[in-house]
Length: 386
Ligand SMILES: [Zn+2]
Ligand SMILES: [Zn+2]
Image 1 (cartoon, rainbow, N blue to C red):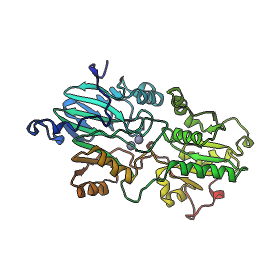
Image 2 (cartoon, rainbow, N blue to C red):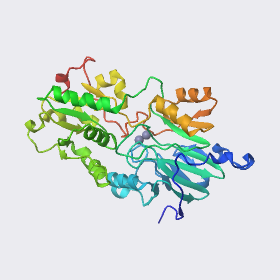
Image 3 (cartoon, protein in one colour):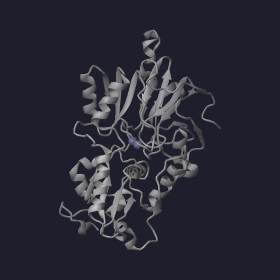
Image 4 (cartoon, protein in one colour):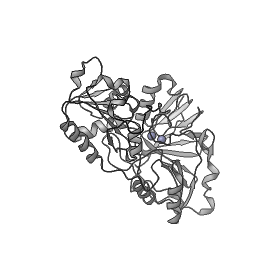
């Protein structure tokens, strides 16, 4: 059975979107946001539509913003998501993706109970969407996870004017400023050039980051085969099937050690400093993550070449987005709420931190994070770890 039936087309919500509906409607008729969207233990509950957004426990109706495991969980009854997010959920969960799956493409509107729901690109990973929800003249946008910089593997974030913007805050501190991706990829390619006798193993999460790093390498002109740990193959193949060209990808299995000399191998973060990486010739351990700005984290994980590449907005992107959506009120969740609440308040915007549980505040996209490799002495050499 379908999530609900009435799909009507609407114009794509871009900068041409009219101002938030409250500007046009007599304020007396507009419901207070908290009266219809509530934080329950199961997650963000939209009462007049009787559905949850990214529920942390199985729900009768779930609107899913994107395929990361802390947002798209298995075993919901009815699931509404973009077509690409549903494909990702099917690939990860099979039948447990949900008893009934309904696709809602970007820019189309679906009425659920008394609420109109539209998905607008969030620029985070393939298929990722902001959930735009409208009820009696009040528009609330749940961003899910998002970023503002260009990403060839997914549609770019589009700001939607609204009454309340619910923002993530994974990197919600002014110290987090991600450098341009191109520079990070140039550092990787420079290292490959510098150490032709070694291999480079790049730790990256299976959904989004892996494919983005590959796309960035291709954009920089790297056209050799890129080798993949088995855990990264299914979603990378799915990206290619869904039209994201990643070039020549090969499984990093069944080959002699020599085959990896001078090559780039992608692996999940848990594998790069693990037994698995011992099959590679003298690997340079790299990690692509927004957390690589924190030197201690890189050190702890035995990362020789940290690459600051994030699928989450950094501080400047968060502040820019709050300006762009122009909402008089923001709700902050999913990370470091306090600084962003303070920033918004100082600009005359009402702001509150939502106490949501069950999300991966590290923004790694995969829960639970596998245990870290224990490191003796705090300043590991490569030899100790591999
Ligand atoms: Zn998340
Ligand atoms: Zn995510």
